[in-house]
Length: 109
Length: 114
Image (cartoon, rainbow over all chains, first blue to last red; front, side, top):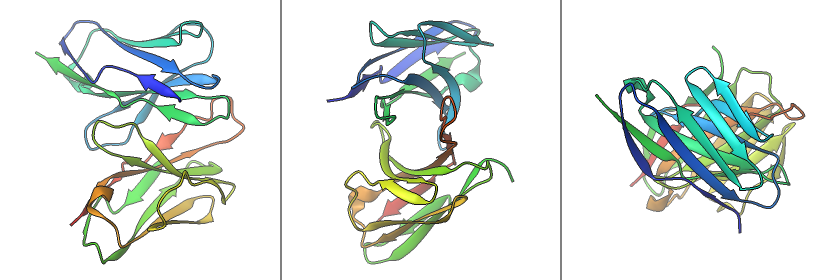
C-alpha cells in the first residue's frame, strides 16, 4: 500500500529552528508538496519538490531525497504565527495525491 | 473575491436532513476536488472533476452526491448522513497540465451530524 509518515506533533521555541520530516512509500513519484494549515482554515501551499536537493523560500526550506523516500520542511526564526499543522503529500505515478496525516507544530514563547 | 470559497462554513444536520455544500473557485482552474478531513487522519479524496467530468469517486457512499455544473462551481449534496460523517469537508481546485498541478483549497465546511 501507499503510505506517508510524519510525526503527529512537535514543539519548538519562538526564534528557533525546527525540522519536520516526511517519509513516503508510494507507487511511483512525481513530486512532493508541503502545505500549512492553521486551525479551522484552508491548507495553503508552501512548496513543491520534484528533484533532489534543497529549495529555499524565505524562512521556509524544503528538502527531498528520492532515493531515500524522504523529505523535510525546515522552518527558521520561528514565529508564533507558525503554529499550525504541516501536511506532506506525494504525487504518485498515476498523479494521485497521497496525503500524510499532518504534523501539528506548537510554538512556545 | 479571490481563491476558493465554500459555503456554509459550519453546518449541523440531523441524519434525516438533506443539505448541500457549495464551492466556487475564482482561479480559472479546470479541475475541482472534494476532500474529507477527520482529526489526525490524512485527507481523504472523495471526488475529482476534470473539465466538469467526474473522473474518480474513491468508493464514497451514495449518501454523498457531487454535482459540477461548470468548471467554477462544485456542490456536494448530502442526505441521510451518519454521525461518523462529521468532519471538515474541503474543496480544492487546480489547473491540470501545469507543471505542478498545485491544489488550492477553500476554508472548508465543518459538518456535524447529530
